[in-house]
Amino acid sequence: MKTILVTCAIIQFDDKVLAVQRSKNMKLPLKWEFAGGKIEEGETEVECIKREILEELNIKIEIKEKLTPVTHEYPDFKIKLIPFTAEYITGKLILKEHSDFILVNKRKLINLDWAEADIPILKEYLEL
Ligand SMILES: Nc1nc2c([nH]c(=O)n2[C@H]2C[C@H](O)[C@@H](COP(=O)(O)OP(=O)(O)OP(=O)(O)O)O2)c(=O)[nH]1
View 1 (cartoon, rainbow, N blue to C red):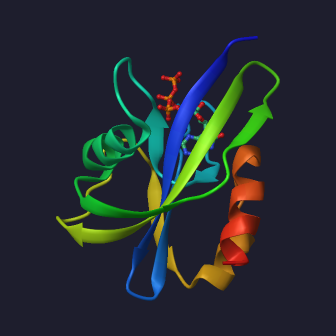
View 2: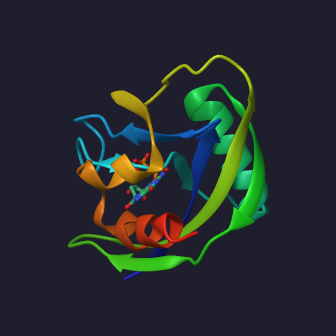
């Protein structure tokens, strides 16, 4: 099975963190995730995550740190999910694709119904 390369960003807004919910017509419907998306040809990981965040959320972020990539096999596809921590810089948050978002204290992130590939990333982030 081909592996899809996907970047995602754990975006901090002061003392809160942003999680977004996939809409019911996307793959992994209604699962929570960190915003991001597929790497396009000729694009670096950092270019990809900044572009995806601007496209999906209408905001600009500053990348802080790369966390450990996770390879995960769903029943019908396989992804390598490449996570970054980031900070909100500017822009009004507008959801272009997702059905919902939440800004929460990082300790409360664990209570959401996450896409499976995100679980190891969330655990690493909670230990930082
Ligand atoms: N952006 C993002 N995607 C994630 C995360 N965890 C996770 O399993 N994924 C999966 C969901 C999608 O299948 C894929 C990301 O692709 P995408 O968000 O650009 O794609 P999409 O839903 O438009 O997919 P498609 O139907 O067009 O193929 O990775 C995550 O934290 N962030």
